[in-house]
Length: 228
Image: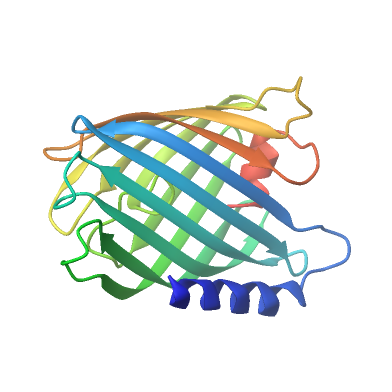
């Protein structure tokens, strides 16, 4: 985890000096729990979005996944740390990212695996709809945020979204993902809850995600269009 910590500190330091005074950084913390083929999967996610100017922004993303099976032989922790860069306008955005993925088995006799990862993100905004594509080079990802996918989202109102994706879980398996996110206005729009269901031959999953935003009150629709 030492390598991940160093990259995170470096990414924040480089990005932090570039943001514009008109737009403040956006910090988000996410906590999720669900069942992956009847095995417990926990997610802890931290995200920093930093505007550079009207058309460019950068992001530091740290995702941690913990698969708990009851046996140390097939339980593991997976971490993904990436620095992503976006060009954006009112009609969509494109992004590229670089990072590192680390798979650490709970069984200390097994070897920890590390690999460099690349990521491409694209999104088109069409009124209440958005079309999203995301590609990540790692062979296996359990994260609720960074997986290869393409899909369509619809905002039922400013603070309620539902999405359907065709998603890639590992090097060979594809499946479907249905999710709905809701951001209550009564809590100053500082948090949201998501319900996620995924289906695949070895990757059936159902769970919930809670996110908290350390910034200012904006609608879910505006937040997701400005920040990935």
